Length: 560
Ligand SMILES: Cc1cc2nc3c(=O)[nH]c(=O)nc-3n(C[C@H](O)[C@H](O)[C@H](O)COP(=O)(O)OP(=O)(O)OC[C@H]3O[C@@H](n4cnc5c(N)ncnc54)[C@H](O)[C@@H]3O)c2cc1C
Ligand code: SF4
Image 1 (cartoon, rainbow, N blue to C red):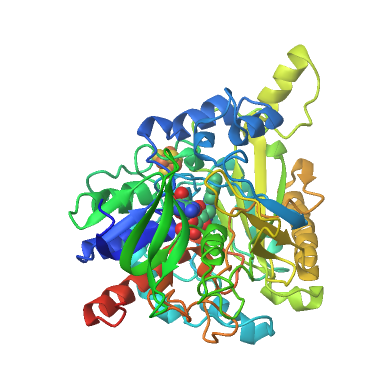
Image 2: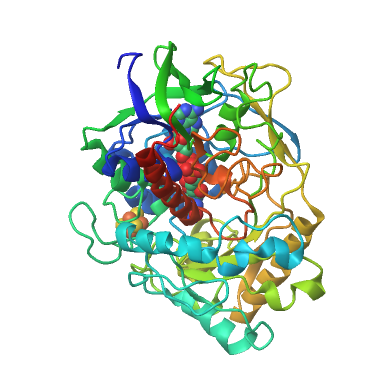
């Protein structure tokens, strides 16, 4: 590539938001240069077939965690795509932050579990409903056509539920429920809905094709651990389903191993004119130029790029005139619980893998949370079969018998609650001046729990107990303390969208208030976290932003 090339769009990142932008822009004739920190993941590294049977079900938990998340000869396949401290450090303050950074074509959608709840109409107006934070600068109705487009074109399985926190969608058939999941469902509908009228316990919605979708997309085999990478393409991932088709087009160029350091601004117009990036293999610096720059490097990394883009025009970083970049970092607080179902003790091992947890319970807290003294709420996911949570401690023959007895009787619950934006949780460039191995200043992530987060966590613990007891579960175990922040991997909000430029970084299309030809297209643009897993909404917002961008390019309104 010559330094003189000027693309219509220089796009950073190929994950959920970047992949969607790349695909839509390229298929609409826009000349795109897509810069990606990592490289493509070969099919043999998509390990969901092996994972469930070889590791998850056999390794002791501590060893499994090591294999999954630490570098070394025993590391599991996807850990090859993590960034470790020797390459790019980060610092934390306060409660700490666990920032697991995957760098590969497809971003984290290569490794995600696929859980895909739409935001509900109520979420978009949460701020004016309970007085905490701003409303989103768009409504559910604005985003609905894009959610529908995703369901139809990218595949989404699940039931269309009638629930205020579960808008209807256009779904493939969901995976059949396992025995333990049916026990939970019976317990909810038989014992708990009188006290909790919004409690529903139905198949989960996941961006997984369970029906034919044409070439390159096999329907799901219900075999295992989708979060290790789906080699048959049943579970949506951006590399296989958005970037691969774009790569066939002459107007789309992917530059892998390109670590973007900063956005370059035109001294005269103040507009973005491109980016500077470092080749990951040679460590040489390059510049790439475009009429428009779109950042989709994920919430924390995009904030880092913006804050590192300092010039006389933008002394505190580009698009940061009001000091909003890096603020409002939020995510979800998680509470895990599990137990054994005595009804299923001794059940013969059989093929009921499904696709991870098959149950979803949308937010049921709205009817009692005011009395309980918290705002917002949480969702619960659940799964069963093939697992051990202790309680069979012994040796030799007794241990074997204990495992056989309990193995199919395991039931687990995962609650995800909304963490509120708070002034103690934000990202800044580390004031010590430390840089990574490419010479790029690193971030410091500050984090603090809001009092409301603690109340939500307490309520999750209480309701996990009630749910498990209702099933008759034994050996109940429930998280006792909130996990390290960041562990949900659902971080959002660092460049939030809003109508008020003093309190937000971009508008509802991801266009930054300060620089009209600079866009955000990743989780950073969320206004609030909500309790719902973010990725389908990142995809829908990026698709809407891409629509707008194509039209603005056509009109010539963004040109430098
Ligand atoms: C194991 C796991 C399970 C998950 N399960 C779910 C789930 O069930 N449901 C759900 O909604 N979400 C889930 N998530 C979260 C989901 O993957 C993220 O919300 C989503 O991928 C975020 O999209 P994004 O576009 O913001 O960033 P990403 O998908 O992370 O993409 C960012 C891209 O930018 C690239 N990049 C980063 N820095 C630079 C740079 N400096 N220069 C160039 N390129 C750069 C990265 O390599 C990557 O390709 C899960 C995540 C993990 C890891
Ligand atoms: S989507 Fe289906 S086929 Fe793909 S990894 Fe998950 S369970 Fe396996």
